[in-house]
Length: 326
Image (cartoon, rainbow, N blue to C red; front, side, top):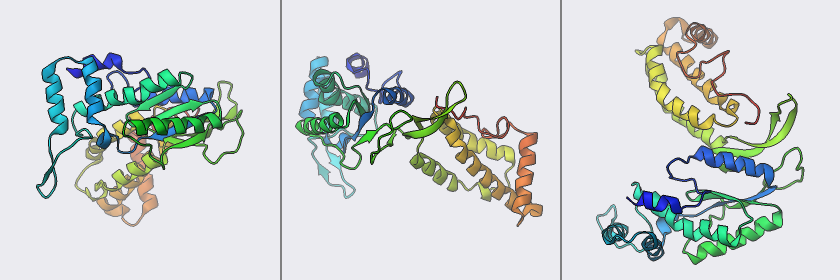
C-alpha cells in the first residue's frame, strides 16, 4: 500500500529496492559518470537499518500518507519490542526490523529526505547514485570530493547516521586520458570493481579505460560456494544430474556478473571444470590417479555435449560476452 504512494516521491538516482530499477542500472549510470568526472566519493552508511530515527521517519511518512490506520500500524511495527536470545525484551526507539518488504521502503523514504533531496537541493551540480546504504558522488576535483565528504558526514550526523570510516574514500578515475597518481584508483560497488583496465575500441585499438567487472570479493565468494558443493562425492550421479544441480545457481551468477566485461567471469567456469575433473576421477576407476586423463575425458564430453553445462558454450568460453569495455 505504501509503495505506490512513496515511489513517485523518490529521486531518480535512487536505485535500491525499487520496482523497475536494478543494480545493473546503478552500475551502468555510475560507469558513464566515471567517464565524465575525474573524481568521486565512495561512501557507505554504517548500520543504516539499525539507526534510523523513528521520529524523523514517521514525520516524513505523515507528510505523504494521511491514513491513520497505516500510520498506527507502521508506528507499532517500528516500536515492537525486540526479544533477545535469552528471552529478554527491549524497547526500540531507532532502527527498522529487517527481513520484510516494508523496511526497504521506509529506509528509502528516510534517506530520500536525509540524503537524496538534501543533495539535489544543496549540491545540484554533484551527480550521485545511491543503492540502499551505498552510494557514489561524482566530483570534478579532489578538493571538491574531500569537501563533499565533510558535508556528507555533517549531514548524516544531523539525522542520527554516520559514514563508515573504512568504506568511505575519495577515488581518482584513472584511464588513458587521466594519468595522475593517487592512492585510490579503484572502488567496489554492488559486487563490481571499477578500475583502469585494458579495453578495445570500435577500431580494434587497445586503450586503458575505467570500467567495471566482477570484483575479487565476489569471485572469492562464488569459489567458496562451489567448494562447499559436495559434487566430487556424488559418484552415483551422472553428468546430466550435476548439470541440473549446478544450473540454477550458475545461471543467477552469470546473469548478474556477466553484464559488464563478462570475460572476467571465466575463472568461475574454469573452477567448475576442475570440480568436474575431481568428480570424474572418483567415479571412474580408469581415471583415478590420472588427472590428465580425466581432463581429456572431460574435454571429450564437452565436445560431444557442448550445451550440457551453462559454462560449456561456443568454442570453450563461457557465454559471457566480449573482452572490450561495454
